[in-house]
Length: 249
Ligand SMILES: Nc1ncnc2c1ncn2[C@@H]1O[C@H](COP(=O)(O)OP(=O)(O)OP(=O)(O)O)[C@@H](O)[C@H]1O
Image (tube, rainbow, N blue to C red; front, side, top):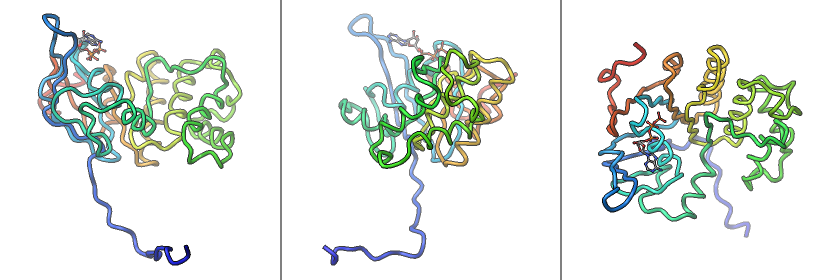
C-alpha cells in the first residue's frame, strides 16, 4: 500500500471561489389545485463563501420560505437551487439530510434542549459529526462557549440563562462544528437592544474567523450594519440591489 502514497505539495492549492448558494429562476408554491398559491417569484441570488447577507422585507414577503429552501429544510420545486454545489431541486431526503449536517441554524426561539446544560447542548451538535468522535467533545464545547463569553455558564441549564445568553449558546451550538453556512431567522427578535447587538457582533466575529457564510433574516434595523450585503424581499420578489430598497429609514 506504500506505493499509493500521494506526494506532499508544499505550495497552496489554487482556491476556486464557487458560490456556497446559487439560485436561478426559483419559484415556490404552497397548496394544491385551486388553493395553489405562488409565494416566491423568479428568485436569482448568488452567495459567496464568507459573506454576511441580511435579508429583510415586510411580513409575509417570503423570507422564511426562501431561508428554509436555502437551508435544505424543504425541497425546491421549480428553477435551480444549489447548496454547496449540490442541486436540490427535487432532492431526496438523504441528500437534504446530508446537506443539513453542513449548515448551522439559529432561530428566534433558541430551541435549546431544556434538560441539557449549555455545554451538553453544544456538545450534542458535535456528536452529529463522525469527524469529531475521536476528540474531547466536552473541551471543544467549553472552548466554544468561552468564545461567546459564556465560560462561566457552561453547566447552567437554559432556564437559568437570560435571553441573550441562551441565544449565545444557540450560536455556539450552530458554529462549533465549523459549518460552511449559518442560517439565522430573526435571531435578535426576542432580545433587548444591547443583547441583540452583542449576539450579532459575536456571530459576525465568528463568521469572519471561520470563513463561514451567514444568511440572516431580520426586521431589526439596528443590526443591518453588520451585513456585507443586504437583500430585500417584497411580495415574493427579491431586490438584489440594496439601492432599490429604502432600508433602515
Ligand atoms: N406552510 C405554508 N403553507 C401555506 N402557505 C404558507 C406556508 N408558509 C408560508 N406561507 C405563506 O407564504 C407567504 C410567505 O411567508 P413567509 O413566512 O415566507 O414570509 P416572511 O417574509 O418570512 O414573513 P414574516 O416576516 O412574517 O416571518 C405568506 O403569504 C404565507 O402566508
